[in-house]
Length: 415
Image 1 (cartoon, rainbow, N blue to C red):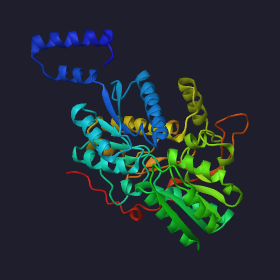
Image 2 (spheres, one colour):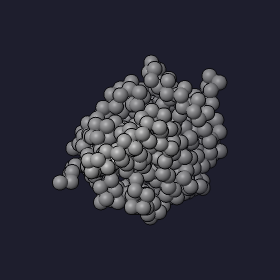
Image 3 (spheres, rainbow, N blue to C red):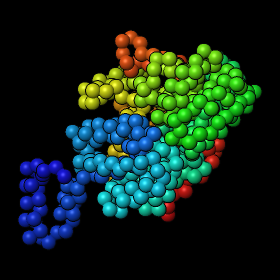
Image 4 (tube, one colour):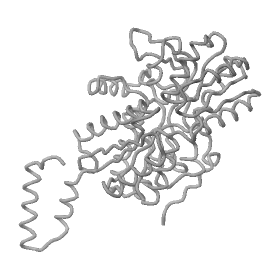
């Protein structure tokens, strides 16, 4: 807790004097509330195969909290960030969520990068009526068939990513796909959505499901090579995706088929050789958007504060925390039910949305509707190591997401 300012000390002195005379009870309670920081609990896999993505989300959260605390915090109170490592394990993630809520008394929860963990955390947060924001866990049921009144999501659904890029891949390269997919919640829903879109366009496919911790892809890539697809979709994430990309290029397969997929995040692009910096993908946010001055200002400030170019993962955390601030101001509360109602339908101002299109949390499923960027990954250009993606098109979130009814979400609020 920060040291009280002189005006705060004088205010407490005045309240104590008033109590002695009039025996008032409300003022000291209000004063005490003002001194207690808003506590944000964050659960992410800081160790394990998804750690690079989690580290970026935590960096984005720390940057945003520092930015808020230089202003007016949330509801006039300073903000404190408490971070726990889920270790990429569902049981650990659930345990850490309960600890943050029951022992550390956090006001809201963020997490997890791992979709399976985020999904399990929802059971805890809804039971305990704590507001839950999922910055970067993509599996569809979170804002789909198993949606919860208290849970909102910043990143896209896998349905949105697949819908945005499948048609572009088919149009440019062909209808025969081979999927390399992680065997957990995110991978299952992503592959299913790609297959649905591909079949609608008359395509065919083969697929291989592998553990998210997989590091050896030779046997799978031999199968892909024999199938002779037009496009290989590397749906793995984090370190597994990096290892797959490295082995793909070691086999020289980039000369035989095109690469693509839902996500190839900048953290992963940076970690592979130039030959593997290729393919057509979705970026859920991009730092070099033309004609969006708010993005230019944010990128400059983030670089000044951290020495880094912001990625989508940094942006996920920024949007999550700034949206909580806006909803708290609207609700005048951090209570889960009140925050949830305040955020439903909330449109983000341009300096938080950081994109040209309209960005808002859809009331029916609590999914952020914002632009998706489809384009090509390439080795760094213009002398900038982070200039590794060229936007081909921006797809509005509502176009990629389809209707609320199509998600299967039936939102029910507590009485």
